[in-house]
Length: 340
Image 1 (tube, rainbow, N blue to C red):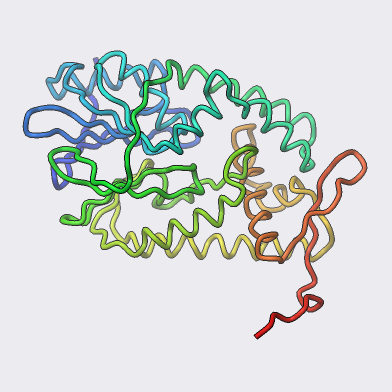
Image 2: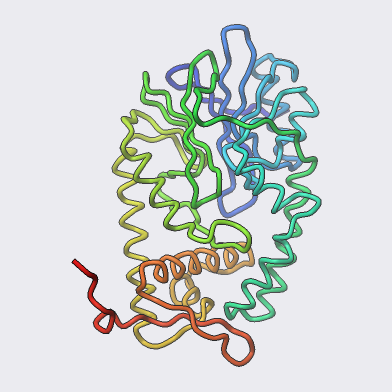
């Protein structure tokens, strides 16, 4: 069995990379052992043969049995974080924890009565995506089901109370935008934060507008960033890339990035009404070569357009012939002045 690289950080946090499909290629899983040898696992990765093999190797390297895994904590419902939780639970008997809101989103997306695989392609079609892209995204969404099977039995984390992991009390923090009900965990004594995909170094977390979910994901994300940036963080442990310092500066950089993208989208609408797909192509054309990338790009473009509408800098028009909903700039000069 191949050796798995495990990095030990301050406070006994163990980090190793679980393999996943491109473009990210890996997701960070964290293990917090307690003084009795029991393990808390954070974000076990997607359910794939490669991820199963990685966990076999890690436990062998740690000289631990499956039963040592007492708790499995999931920061959010995306398959690269949530997917292996059911399999790991079945092997270990451990308890799976996440926020109630995140579990609701998991059921909406992956459950027996989930609607997203059918609703999202139709949603994109309504905003101008061509049928060939729509069909590709439908097939792409269905390909995730093996990565989240079996589904775990879930207990809910109460964000109003500290959550014990590795003999330390961590404060759960619920933010959204990237994923509704996303949990980060902050340890005030050390300044460490396990932040999942709420704040990532070097890359921007995807912000997606999706049917049946948060109608204002960009606003939610930016509000969450402002909350998180107020913490005294000495080191952040993200879902992707390496643990990093400069947490406040990174949060500020992400806030600026989205303000700049909002300005780009508003400038596009200044030239005349556009479909959501037209805005998506203008913002992301050079970075889209697959259905996976197009799903993220379209959802993020729509999230920014929804925020422009909320700020009264754009309005929804249509649908046009063919059933396509459009976005148009709002003439700021023509708006009535607010009362003093």
